[in-house]
Amino acid sequence: MQSVTSKVKPIPDGYHSLTPVVVVEGAPRLIDFLKQVFNAQEEEVYKGPDGRVIHAELRIGDSIIMLSDANPQFPALPAMVNVYTEDVDAAYTRALKAGAISLREPSNQFYGDRTGGVKDAHGNQWWIATHVEDVSQEELEKRMKARES
Image 1 (cartoon, one colour):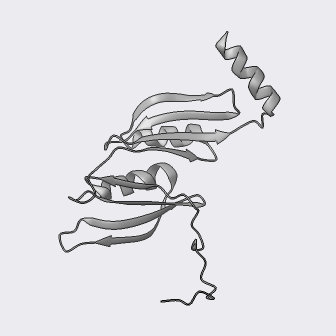
Image 2 (cartoon, rainbow, N blue to C red):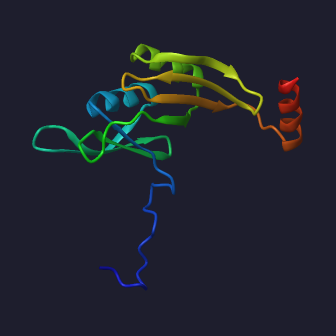
């Protein structure tokens, strides 16, 4: 055990305070999907003797997503994840080619993002976004009011 005066970082290099964990039946299929759609890079994949994924970490942009195959302790649960990309339209098209179902075609939003949504074969929703406009708080409030009328 490290001493209290140790310089060990509480959040390891390359990680953020918030890291999504997705649990599915068929983790290798999800890994392939994330590689195809978001150019995810495998950081580590640990498999059990039965070949099932016990733990995997993939890097998408500057973030890590963890995933595994479901088991009795951690059942499969659908997730909803927002992913910022350089080109939402291209990522959305890749998602459809990888077998995802469209939830919403990419479109510009009042808050300054262009977003689209897809659902993967496991039922996870992936909301894909590219920030296209910086919107001031004043302008955001004006646009929100205009939407309500």
